[in-house]
Amino acid sequence: MAKKNKQKAQAKQNLKQMPKQKINFFKFPSLEPNLINSYEIMQLLKNKELDKVSARLRAQARSVSTAVSLTAGFFETLNSEIYGEQGFILDVTTKNKALNVSIQNAFFEWEKQCCKYDIFDFEDYEEMILTALYRDGEAFIMLHKGERLKIELIDAEDIDNELNDENRYIYYGIEFYPDEITPKNYYRKLKDGKYAVISANDIIHIKRPKLAKQKRGVSEMASAIFDTHSKDKLKKSELDRARLSSEITGFLTRKNNVEVLGDAEFNDSGEFVQKDINIPQSLQTGTFEFLDDDITPHFVDPHNPTNMEYFLKSTDRDVARSLGISYATYTGDLKDVNYSSIRHGTIAERRHFKRLQNFIKRKFHDVIFKEWLTCELLSRKITPAQYGEILSHFIFKSQGWEYIDPVKEVTANKIAIACGFKTISEVLREKGIEVDAFMDELDKEKEIVTKLRDIKIIKGEIDGN
Image 1 (cartoon, rainbow, N blue to C red):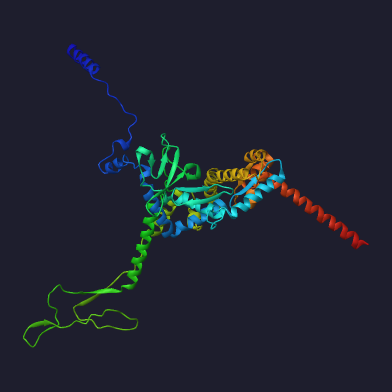
Image 2 (cartoon, rainbow, N blue to C red):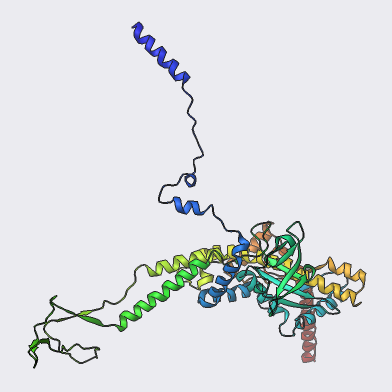
């Protein structure tokens, strides 16, 4: 008994002397991958610098945007959803209504002749800039300042991605100040291999950077290029395969794997030779062909790809998600759509569109209007006081969207307003209608109703007499 107690005491003493085992509660699979996944996981550590791959992604996106039908249609849908029927409309809201109307009309007239080369109008530039922003990842607008402001869209390929000089702080065709964030000059490629140096003050560079120090934009289609191209190639290859299987009826083989067929003979020289075999090269409806005994026909089975539709739909859903739109909008496929699903998808989609609308207003429309207003001030068409007043009282109005189900949504808004959850102004803004413009239109309609009522009264009096 004493021996056992001694052994237990010794065991306890040994446990106390052993180092305590550390338990790791944060054991991530990606840090300890198995042999199958180790290569793919290690590749994640080799991220490419975005500016180094922007040119290649841009070239791929341009090819896909013209070669793939759904992607080409996406850009048309994007323009119509963002700009609507009339683009963004300038609304000046100073206390001087005459000044508001004057500035709005003057800017509207400028929009028709804003192009440096008198080829495009302002709505053309709106669409080209949106397409460039999504497809190329960036858009360059050059400002030609003078008595009248003129604008020009520079192709992203003309700002050379290969032009780099660290000693002069030139990266990817853009010269920066020593902080390497603020642009100083842009280098535009010319035909003779030289460059035109353009001050950053005369360039509007629109991009949606992923990193703070990113010099060039990256295509918004970057994550969808591979899936889109793979799906398009598979679709075409399956179509080619189906076409070949429908055109190739079959082929002929020998029954026995022997060198000499049964139908053979000796020629005049005494040599043993094979006689000519009648092998038909084509088939026609309503005819029969005679085959020799040792020839067997094999017909090609009709092509019927399995799971093809599921793969195409799955890929289209992934691509639509990466582009920020719903599957139904991207493909036009409304087969399995009901009110609840399309409403959920449309709400998320429109929220994305509204953010994009606000981004373009801030980066393009607001900047252009301020530059135009400065030119108007320098040419003495407005006074400094008017300039300051207008500068703090203008907005570009974007389009709203139609109701998905008007009866349900109008009823819901009516209940929300009655319960105090929403205001009339909020409902109007959701439709893209400014309150001031709405009130002005109401006043005009009241005048029309009053005049019609007066006419009706006068007409009744005349008829009564």
